[in-house]
Length: 346
Image (tube, rainbow, N blue to C red; front, side, top):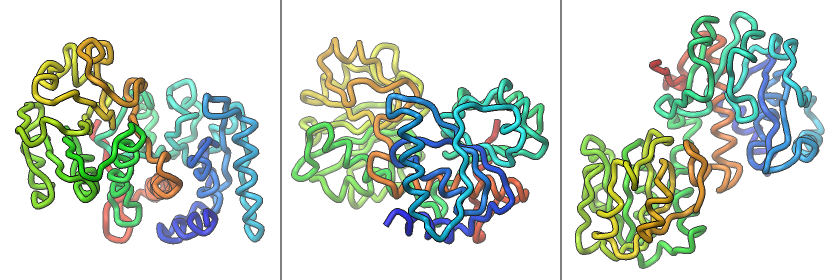
């Protein structure tokens, strides 16, 4: 099944990396697919890996090789590396902004050749300064571009609701016959609301006023706008608060955050915050007996990842990012008359 999905996505995107060298990562879990997708598209792939809390380099290489070996009719050119040598960096046409390779700084990119491109596997508004040295990238005239995850052939955003449902279950709650509140200030909100509102009793949304028109107001109660908290009586006993805010690495709730923890305590009975994304002040919330899940999330990281609901969103995301790389090399931005390269205004 996985083999067919990878081939189908390469075909859907018309991904063609023949005669190109891709430097990416070999990783655990669903992210195992990245070097395989690039190789299926014809690239010579260098897959960098290392030991992490998710698995050893040896385990990651073994698991990736098992999938590659299943493609008996394909000659996939994947070389696993545990050291980023100047020679390998210099050979790459595409360097992906993948976890093991980050940060892409001067120490690494000074060896990159003219014309190399860096596709970012997320949308432009999710840009994180810690990922790469933008000043050095500009000085080298390296082309970068983010991925329009809402492009019809990528369509990652429609998995955001499934991720919220999984987080609800993981936290020990049940959507059916319960009320929930969504507090949001970014583009994730309408996609989360579309799915969650179909499986819970009632969903209330707090978001920026300018985002109101993006929601299906037939299926939710709008109680915006962000960051004001004014919870009607109907939602004071809500099962949980789904929280998603950007920038991801800013303290949003508690302490000196934008949202006062005391207002939540006063307006919601025994509030529990589901940390979809956006930092919270854990110590402050704990002191006020406000529950939150997961208990610990690294600053700037999401509390639920697309990979936690399976391979499908990761296949689409990583292949979309690789297609961005191909388009950048060809100095193009559109796929099937729809923009895929998301421009970064920095």
